[in-house]
Image 1 (cartoon, rainbow, N blue to C red):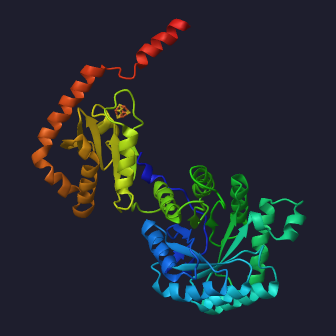
Image 2: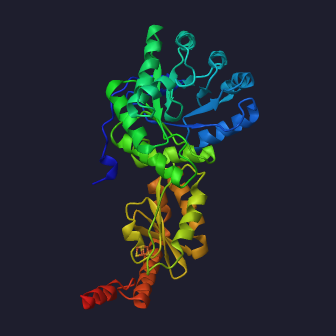
Image 3: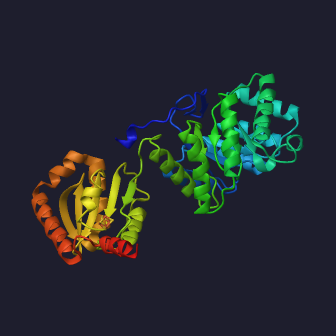
Length: 410
Ligand code: SF4
């Protein structure tokens, strides 16, 4: 079965607009990230926003923690390629200033801005400007009253109650352009909080594992939390919170959504064989080189790097394009069919060249270009395949010898 045909039903939510980007009610799930510059540094922040947008971020958040940051936002917002969310921590005045600066969304942490009259003043202003607010509950900064109420611990119930309390304040001033997050650094806690929240509200949800930490553990934690919920149909927008270059956050967000079939492929999906006794190249090294070469190219293809021509083209026949090693040569194949042969050190540049050709001119044009080289490529692949089998035998991984050994020891 085509994996792309499996679709996870999504929880029904309302839709809000963050600038011109829809969030919720079946809109494509969006990727968010956050700048790590000082927002007062307008040029530096814009550079990072452009880098994040190029890496796949649909929406970018900037901190608004001081008056200079509000002023920075007034200069950044008109020049940003994507909608901007202002992250407000303790000062409700920064929220009012950020709205004045023209931001497309606010993020308020109910644990930090606690005075009802301040919350309502911000919501009123946002309502009049038609700007949404994310209620950003954070397990690490829960309102002290809720923390005490739930036995001096952070529970999913406490986090959900925090979000509902904030919604009640917003209701009082007739404001409902809301999205909600209930992030925690503890993955099971975060998952359960979102599950419970999804049961009691139809506002769109922003998913994330907060303070997930540096890669690779941070990536695993964030993916465990976000992916589990996406597979359950929960979530309308996501953010990886890593101790790493935010460009990585944006890239990972895209990769996750593309791998779920929740966003159209924009970047290369690189697959590679695990290598074995038949490999004729260092598969890890060549796959890494390919990953680096494709990193900043937006080519919506599945690309394969395979260690041998004996099984490579067949094992990766579903890939749009791939290359397999054999006798110091690279055997290029398109949809499993051998089309060209190049020296081993040209494997990665050749993959890039043909992937760009397919993207720009289409698969048929690429296959037409291969007409003159295809027969020779098939013959060369067969020669190198036979050579590998002659040299390494049918059992290159010595599996059968091991099986014999196991049997003998019984
Ligand atoms: S048989 Fe070839 S393609 Fe398959 S894992 Fe081994 S080297 Fe890679």
